Image 1: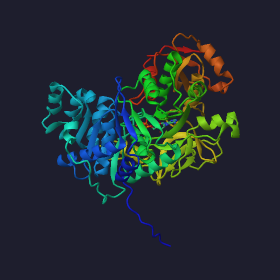
Image 2: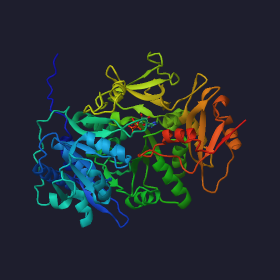
Image 3: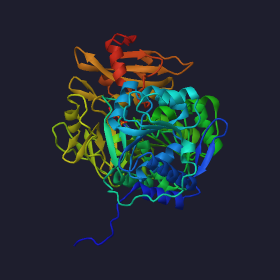
Length: 556
Ligand SMILES: Nc1ncnc2c1ncn2[C@@H]1O[C@H](COP(=O)(O)OP(=O)(O)OP(=O)(O)O)[C@@H](O)[C@H]1O
């Protein structure tokens, strides 16, 4: 029988309309050391309308791209809502990419207008000369005449505008178009380039909408929440937080450029933050700051972590010392990005060991996403928590192809096409699944250490080493070995004031992992190199080892 339900398109403008009316009193606070500024969702809705009118006047009346070069702040949220709602496509540029990657992604994205924070105007002035498509630059905040001149210097830039002046006086309501196709692009985002060149993903209205409702349902945030959004709006679709907030009505705390542990602790204390989102290195930094300096974290109940594997020692430390649940999430730019979240059954019900197995896992697949495990022989693996394979996913917010304008370097198009398997996305992440939908990742397929025909999980080794009290960070990479093909090299950062020897660390691992997996090569380093978004940059470590640029101690 054919359905007779209505089927209006699922559009970002619906989320905007809902959030800014039903949750009109919820707030966005953009933090600054001198107090910051607070805007209500109602005002955000009015500003989004004003921005849409202003962009129309600058010629945005179809699916043109509008780029942002901004921190997490209220104006960035306004842009996140306004640009897709008017039918255009938002491209939040990842300000942390290396310059050549930034130019590549910005040109590839093809934006005509760029909205830029004043604190980022100088670096953008250097970038804009390489972006011949940009016709207008809109600056959020004041800049010196010199910087304004530099922004407008390239011939292709017709005008440099001031964000506040541009929208002032525009009507505070906008007729958001309803005749858009829900499958049209609403925003685009590039991967972090951890394993190669950043790849472009185009999100549709439908993918963002369904992702937001799926995540909102699982996260269960409410208007009573103050959510600290550390994850940048320019990376991995901001984990969907701008759109989840429109559904859930949770107030947002935006840290702008103040991402160091001390200001983050202050935001939590001063603004009564209840929940937050960030990569493991952010929360690790906060933990070390709190342990050294103390702090009142009593309002905070949950911090979401993802982007790379969060060590269980980090989760336990927050829970035991600050009564904060660290919720592990997994996903990729290609999955909008959240695909699973590690909420666990109550500890009293399942016992401590089982509870921590759930919590340390990458979480349970969110309703709407399907996942399967494919073994090395191409066969689907059982979901018994043991059998290992590559995770493949599909669903309404999983991308079906990369954004391509045909300009990818030779060979990359084939590489990108290989990520799709008859409607499923090959994630490149290797692990097991339980019968009740939890994913337990052991590694990225490119980081698994293949030693004498057996696989060693670099993440497992890192987590075990990082549970040693003297270790601040550890990263493990596979390095060539004459006998075994590949062996693990453990690079460790020792906590300030602590001392530990390689033998002590090897002894520490002895009852935690199989003997043959214990690394014999160790190097103490000052800091684990990180990618633009704070992930351990294993490419750099492998290169430093190959160049003989690490002081390696070898056991036995
Ligand atoms: N909770 C997690 N545990 C382990 N790994 C994670 C987790 N969350 C994300 N990841 C890793 O991050 C990847 C997605 O990251 P992202 O989309 O930022 O790009 P990238 O994969 O780092 O870059 P590129 O695709 O350009 O190499 C996942 O495929 C996975 O390997």
